[in-house]
Image (cartoon, rainbow, N blue to C red; front, side):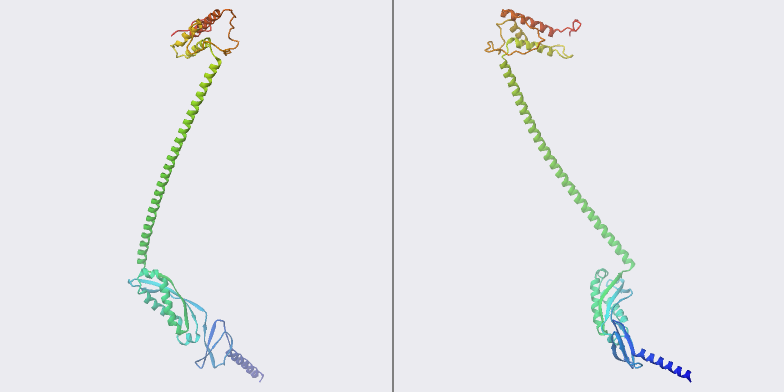
Length: 362
C-alpha cells in the first residue's frame, strides 16, 4: 500500500514538472516565438519569460530577428558575348516580420538564393565580359533593388548585396593576362622613352647653361686680366718715369763734371767683357771723348755744364781708392788724373792673371 502511494506521488510530481515546462517558455533576446493553438497562429512571444497554455498552445518556430549573412556558392552566368563566368554573392538581410517570414514563405533563405541567381543572370546577360568585370557596383545595386522588392512581402529586408568574385573561363583569363601584360609593357616602354627624352633635354639644357656660364667666366676673366695688365703697365711706366726723373734729378743735383763721367765709363768696361762666351767687344766712342776730356780741359763733352755754381757732389768710393797728392797747379792735377784713368782702362782692357801671366787672347 505504501509503495503504491509512493509511485502515485512520483507520477504526480512528474506531471507537475511537465505542465510547468509546457507553461513557461523563455525566449532569448533578438528572437521571436511563433505560438500556434491547434495548428493555427495565436500570438508571438517576445524575448523573456512567457506563459502559454500547456498542451494547447505550442511554440512552433523561434525566428532570429538579427541581421544575417548568407554566402551563396558560385553560379555560372552567361554574358552578352556568350562567355560563361562564375559569380558568387553574399546577401545581408534581416527578418522584420516573424509572422510573414513563417507563413508567407516556406524557406526564405532558399527563396532568396534562387531569386538572387535568376536576377543575376538577367543583369549579367545584358553585359559583355569587360563591362561585367568593371560594373560590380551597378550589379550590386540591381540585385539589391530586385531582392528588396520581392522579399518585402516575406517580412525580410535585404540590406546589402555584394559580389565576392567573378571568375572568367581559364582561356579568357589567359588572354586577358597576355593583353594586360602587353599593355603594361607598352606603358613601361612609353614611360622609359619619356624619361630618356626628359633626361636628354635636361642634360642638353645643363650643358648649354654650363657653356654659357663658362664663356661668361672666360670673358670676365679676360677683361679683368686685361685691366690688370693695363694697370700694371701704367704703374710700371709711372714707376720707371719716376725712377728716371729721380735719377735725372739726382744727377743734376749732384752736378757731375767730366772726370766723374770718364770714370764711370771706365768702370763699365769690365762689365762689357764679362762672360766666357764674349770673344769680341767694342769700345763705345764716348770713351775716347771721355779720355779726351780728361787730357785737356779745353775740350768738353756735350751736355755737361762747364761752370759750377756751387760745390759738386762726388761719389764716395771709400778708403780703397788711393788719395791723389795735392798740387798747386790745376794742369798738373788734371794730367795725373788722366794718367790714372789711362792705367785703369788698360788694366780693365787687358787684365792679368793672379800669377802675373797674360790671359789667352781670342
